[in-house]
Amino acid sequence: MKNRYHKSSKLSESKFRLVVKCFALDLTATQTAEMVGVSRNSINLLFTAFRCRIAENSKLESPLSGEFEADESYFGATRVKGKRGRGAGRKKIVFGLLKRDGKVYVQVVSNAKAATLQAIIRGRADIESVIYTDGWGGYDGLVSLGYEKHFRVAHGKDEFSKGSGTHINGIESFWSYAKHRLGKFRGVAPESFELHIRETEFRFNKRDESLYKILLKIFRNNPL
Image (cartoon, rainbow, N blue to C red):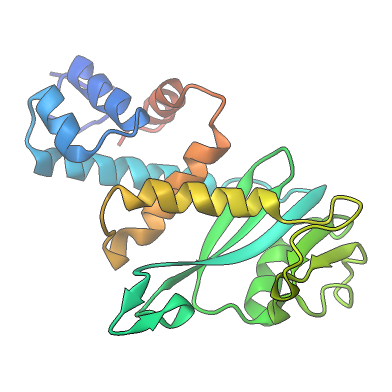
């Protein structure tokens, strides 16, 4: 019963690989449990371990340079006790930084103030980078920080794109993908939300690769 990918697992390697394949295919824990013949609780524990390892690997990503789209998005119920939009319940705020034709980096934040968002941008994007944002006040002052190539679109004035490629369509497409994907869970517990958004980031960034092979390599090099 020795398993090179999971030191304390009671699953054989063949069954463990099947669980990894189901996870890579984005099947639910219930679907995976039925397919593998293991309890849903056991699958949930494995899926959580997978997500923790994905989050660890995400933190190793190096700062980037190039053209970026920055934006923040709110995740949670659309309406809670008559409130809609940003005021609906305790929504999770996620900041995203997308390199055009490249990867996205996301981070759950406590607020969308300038100090919070700009600290992340400074840590992830080279000072020579081109930054595209909307008109949110959290991005005021980027030029003063040294990001001289900061371009904005005024969504509040129904402006969604203007000349020279000034738009944030890429990061908004990611938000759409993320919300559609997380929607299938019909609610994510607050304590596990960050793991789920990290997993979504990982899936987006590896969308043209074999997630199954990538995950097996991660678990082989650093067993669970």
